[in-house]
Image 1 (cartoon, rainbow, N blue to C red):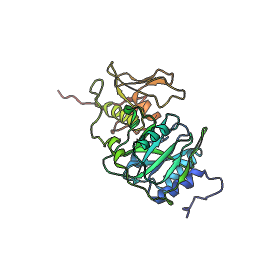
Image 2 (cartoon, rainbow, N blue to C red):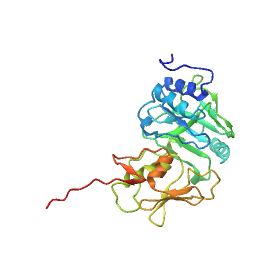
Image 3 (cartoon, helix red, strand yellow):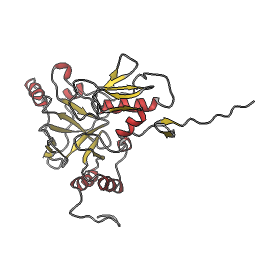
Length: 294
């Protein structure tokens, strides 16, 4: 039942009712920018707790056109194999099926571009990984583990809409098959090497950015000039290669023309909460005054 002060109407965004339904199922969900597949909010807190009714309603009042995604992992109890049709995922699955590697019957979502999301029961120690079989020449398969994001129905993009082919009510969540566990990367406690001066202010921001890019499949790696490079999440045109450069001292630059600036500015664009209890002004930390005695 709607809480006092909130009136449900036929003009409510469709993803609002869906979000409430998914949360009632026990899943953690967040809004997603249509077509970009990342949230307009800092979503880290929702890896460990579900959003409240008040938060959900605030989100879809603020962004009525927002799509919806489940935060995969142990909290929601789900993990997802993402088969991207445009990248050759169905052909890769056919090759795996020919080897006798099957997928158990379970919930399945048809994506906006005609791909598939296969849902499984979450398992401890399994993280997210993009291109899980690229090294075998089988592209188009990504795994959304702990943590990760998977777009949910009834989300829409210019390419189409997401829909359940098999709902969780029709089939229970199956266990992740053994062959998939072998290629899904375990959760790693390690942090990326820090390129640049050991600044106590920018180090956590730099690490948070690299972590975010890794989880979302933008494949960050250490460059040759004291920087890290990755595919750019801000680009709206096809990239020929990694175009985003991150440097702890110089900030970020996208060579596809998305812009440049400080690491804090990039973190805010991506909805990443800046770690640490530091006050910022114009993208720079406000350093504490140190009293020096005689």
